[in-house]
Length: 403
Image 1 (cartoon, helix red, strand yellow):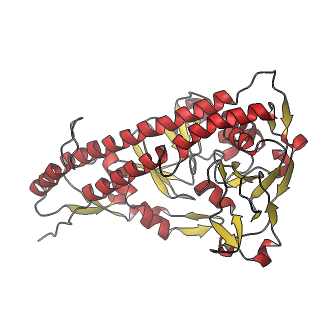
Image 2 (cartoon, rainbow, N blue to C red; image 1 turned 45 degrees about the vertical axis):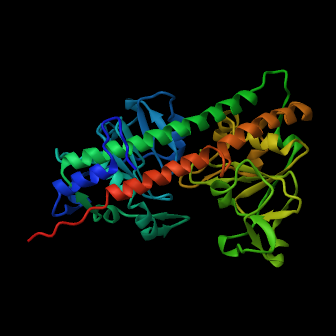
Image 3 (cartoon, rainbow, N blue to C red; image 1 turned 90 degrees about the vertical axis):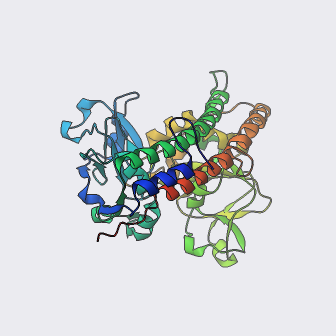
């Protein structure tokens, strides 16, 4: 397969150019020997939330997807980076991120930039992405989340081809990431429509969740308890990784004895994950639409109500819900929303008939945006696999043996 346009040559042609320019392989060097490491800034999750300013120029990175935007005057001048860098997310989800605008990050993380003319920092970023799996396996457990140390990254051996080759690799892989970004933008269109449909005027009454629903705290259940048969269950971590807005099937089960000690989930109930590593993900929700009762465990809240379950689950995805959630979420390294506080969330409640009409529209959008076999995620996954294939192929160099 070849890629053309935007100055990108075909993969096969590129392979030949690598062979011509590096007939004896390439040298490998330790990452720590070719980059400059920068420290972060001492800031808590609560400060990130309260000081966040829309459209401010300095982006602050925390774990997972959590970011905030500050003015230059909100941070010590020495903590603001203005050069293209690779940010090391060292705790929780171990990963690398490239950024080329003013930024900083929490001080539990670190970042790298290069002062050498023969090194493309974005080339290093793309290579480091191939090392994430290795680092995740190596990560040691600290509290609830895995963690890596500075030597884990600085001792990584990096293949260093000529700068021309580095630049060409970046061109090819940028082409793939731009395509994936375009597909992701279509998912944002779905989010826009969701917010518009569920943004009501004052004619629609709003009620606190606790006024029309029972909010029950989950209990017990670890990943070790999950099995392939028995009573259906949903572990809170699976809400983040597997389930969409609603489901009628569970992917895990527990034995009858354990099930009898756990909270029951009935048809139409919502299961809310009330603990997360970041503010964006906390309170991710799935509506249970299966015929049989299932169970859930700790770090969840079960919402039992008399409204349309899909309607409520969709509302929990909106920007309006997110704004309210931010006011009741708390924590630094682990973000939590207590079930008692969840009851305070104000929800617009049109008639059940109107809720059903809205759900029918959003179901069609949701099928396009989230269906795992026919919708956009399948296309995004396919492009991501294609990107990873070529990335790994382009970044597989034979080490030069010095004579």
